[in-house]
Image (cartoon, rainbow, N blue to C red; front, side, top):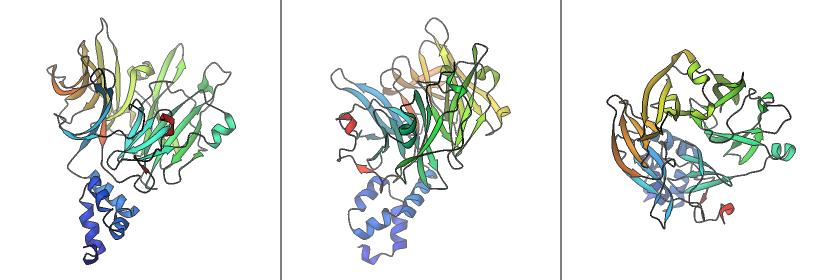
Length: 379
């Protein structure tokens, strides 16, 4: 059949097929495989998926009966009801899925566990990122580190940035800038970044990152006058340089452990959350209306104080909030009338993760299939 169809016709036909179907098509003939595996096609297919009307979310939760509890991953339609699109098979052998999600970008999920892993659930391909690097070989094991994950649109490549904090004799480690490394999927290796990060701290545990406008964002802070001064540390993944974004005083003076950076409703956002009193939880969402203009920070919405609501998972365009309840379920919360509706998605409290997802063919040429034991750390 492929012999009767010009390359341009095949290209356009394949362009409208989902990744799972394309993997099957690539097994039909070498000529079909050459079209589908071509980097130009993979890039065009990804760009078309980004503009597709079918918006998806990826969900992680810990759920199961008393004998078979494990983390589950699934894709859902990006609607108020979060209807199921597809259950995902977790690919890492001898692991229950208890891995920290660093971030999600253009079809790839970046995990941190005993190893750093990149996974494309659409085509079940995975890459195990090397643990060692020249920086680690020279300076040794860092005191702690933070990670960022995103996509370089200029190089057409996914990248992981790593901030390495080494123990120093000074009272606070931010007195010395962290060492910075960048991993590129295309090269499969780490390299040092010469542009220094500002002298600051990122929380040692529970840090979050958000990829937006071609840059990775973290909550950073400095300790001043027995308190904190928080801000956003930004790393441009294309230009490979650092900058900062100031926060409003009410956020800047908060504990960095109470702040979470995220992309909500298509805008860079800060979630301020914490315990209120008598086991009640309260959170507020701030959005940067105009990117890179700190004066445009706006307090968009607040939930609580409540004994029923937990962390914010997402924000709908209509102002409704996707949240985790204290009963261990995903709920749709209306902050204007303070009503919540169960969506029938259950899991253990504190284990939910929700992010936008785009199906793609990323890692088709670089990754390994799940039938291969690529993650030896879990054996």
